[in-house]
Image 1 (cartoon, rainbow, N blue to C red):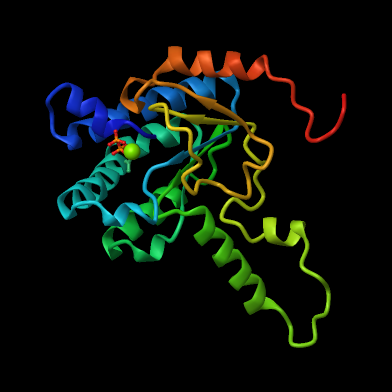
Image 2 (cartoon, protein in one colour):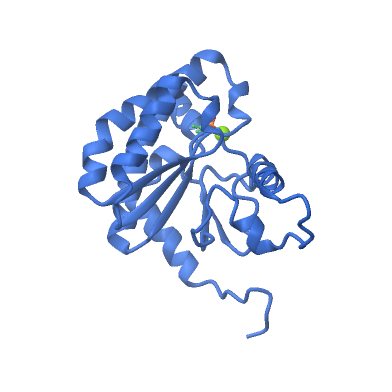
Length: 221
Ligand code: IPE
Ligand code: MG
């Protein structure tokens, strides 16, 4: 969800204002996705690299996560959203961890759409965590080779389908350590829209662009 800082700068506002407005975009996009029958929406909210930002910005984001959970939880439950926070959650404050687990518990029966909010997430970190989990659970004499299915089964996104469409806002042409394994065959759509400006109309444009793509998965059709 890139471009919050630029959105704020354009308006001579503090970066925090961009992050706040970004939450509104997420609400709009989530609602539209649910309406369009999208079953999984995965957003990149905080990367393992984002800890390197100024302390007041990091603190603001942590508070924004907590506040947004409090504000939105009832509505999420009501609208059948299953909310998941995925990433190295154990590095957050105990209070935020509790809030995140409680919100996941409260929404776990949601069957309209799954919203994965990736926090303290890195694609490489996820693969490292998956490999370690496999190694820890391996019996001493196990000789079988680890295969793709086994790695997939230990990712944070285990049990979920790979994304069909990857949307990059704010004109960035990088993957930035997002879902490295899962996006192997994802269609990439880059838009100049800054995340706080990315709303229903921009989502429809992205989906329409996606519908024009020819997906071959490495084969000749
Ligand atoms: C949001 O956008 C990303 C988060 C970590 C929440 P940015 O803060 O990266 O915005 P730009 O890139 O400065 O515009
Ligand atoms: Mg950025």
